Image (cartoon, rainbow, N blue to C red; front, side, top):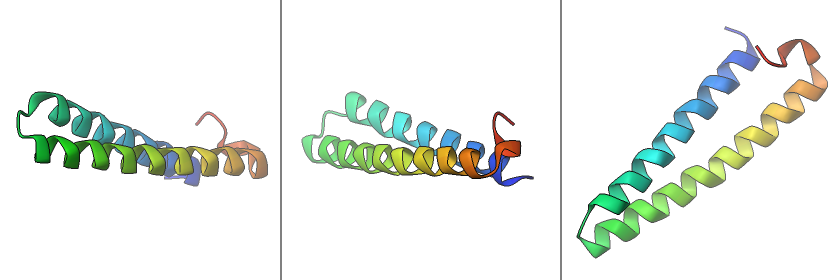
Length: 68
């Protein structure tokens, strides 16, 4: 598995985790749990931004990894 493929897989995984936390936050009635799920979703969104920036850097440095 190439670096590009690994990065794409990591991004997809983090996107899925963020979406799951957002769904949990919407579905729960427990306000404390809702807050926790929202905070986790924000953490995953932040990680996603970081990973996407890293992916862009990799693509600039190593064009062979682009769109794999």
